[in-house]
Length: 263
Length: 263
Image 1 (cartoon, rainbow over the protein chains, first blue to last red):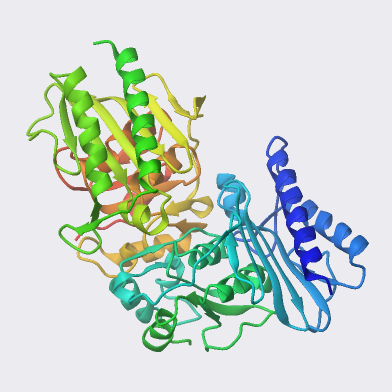
Image 2: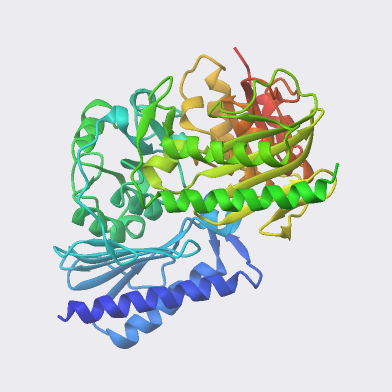
């Protein structure tokens, strides 16, 4: 497998998709609703996914595609090469803000993350990594993350998880919020993973993410020494929803041990 | 008073300060601590405030300056013309992220907001307004905000206010978080005010802000029809700390009436 070739191909495809999205803002956006009001989908989302699929199917016919909008393959195992794609991560931001959303892509071979990409389209910030070859922000090498104490940490955690919820004991998260330096919430898991990988956040957590939200970012995080797991401390599922936490070393352990208690 | 001249002067000064900040990232940042760990100050913060003060004192010697870093005047009343300035709003973002901070400036005459500015330095996004003459985003006129229902609203609220705190009954905020479409937190009051004014957020609230955090943004918000008050529904104090809420019409009333209960 020529991973250098695939890397250049994927970057080019993502940049081209970014252009399509920016151009789309000159046209109208039709808003549809999926399972609930928080889960907005647009025609652009679908068009961009179909653009990725048609290209990948044409140029890499034996690769599989797992995408948020469901136009890819019915992926039941991690055998072979799988492109795990979110054409627009942060759809609510996309609609309400026309910014703060990202294209997220992870390319896995036999379940191992080989290439990861997060593209903040409107900020024109490109994060990527290749397995064992480091992570980059706009083509500049990202440094290894150092240990940070909780009292010094800025954590990406949405207010939903501080309120009572059906997934976890929110009292532990209240203590977390009160013990850290500050919290932020940007509404895009991919962007928050990119922020942790580039040291702009020290941790990020969510109780319910899908493979395409994290597949690209996990490969980038791995290359800078961030720890990314589900909230049981295991590798997150790539074939279904799971809990998720990514953090600097040390901080990951502290958060899991002292603050996160699943129901 | 030639407000058109002052407007052009202030814009130019802010852009020049933005250049100084970007250049400063090539140098080291010394971090000092003020009253607590969340209240970080940098030498750049001080230098930028002193730059503003020296220029304003030279060119408008009878105007007063109220600034976060305290190098301005000892302002005890709102008489005369007062420049209310935060050279870097979102200092924690400035240090941790090198982005997501803003220069905030409001110019008041006899307590009335005449000119307001928020400059997202790294995003190069400039928001400004003149009293009764509209608000602008990168020189494009911002439309009047329309009424939005809480169930459709994306609200800027930090996790701190969802956790038990000494300022308000957090149960009301838990209900707010659960009733709205989503929440965000960016860590810069000025940027969140700019986001509300440009329709990217539907509301923003905080329990403890200073005049320089809101002085510029309030004038911009006013021009697009956003309602900005303290949490008693009054005009926020411009000479001391206060609570703060800004929201689209309708939503402001709903939040104050149904969700915000001060201790």
